[in-house]
Image 1 (cartoon, rainbow, N blue to C red):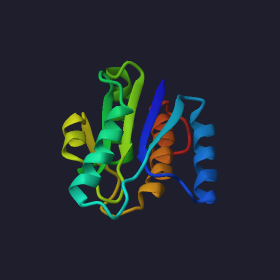
Image 2 (image 1 turned 135 degrees about the vertical axis):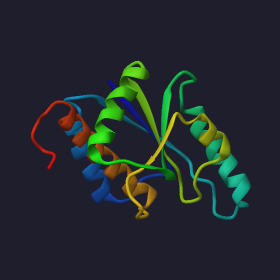
Image 3 (image 1 turned 90 degrees about the vertical axis):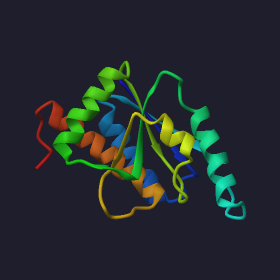
Image 4 (image 1 turned 180 degrees about the vertical axis):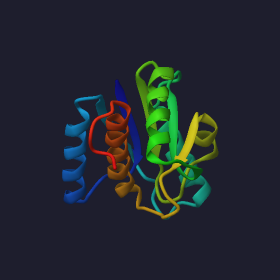
Length: 154
């Protein structure tokens, strides 16, 4: 199985890099993880142009036939058990490959929203788009553990 995470912007925090390495290592038992970073648009651009630029970059990194889930503040909130079931089904439906997309601070271009097969959020709280990467990996790890009946989830 392959988990592709398309992210806007570069990761700059060493502690987050370490956390991502740790959860990528933990997930390696279940799937391959690949981060596909796209440039964030400069804050000096008008919002519409910035979203369009980031949206085009995001879409260029996604295979046409791929299943795509957006990490979206306007998405559905799910608990860990539901996320686990839906993640496993997403891998089945996507030919063992699933793309997650984490937008930049301005959100998603409409074209990216239209491309999505699923829109979810983990919380009503707002996280930085860089921290969302780590939260996503931890939740994917938890989902695999739940799906396989392994200890970890409580």
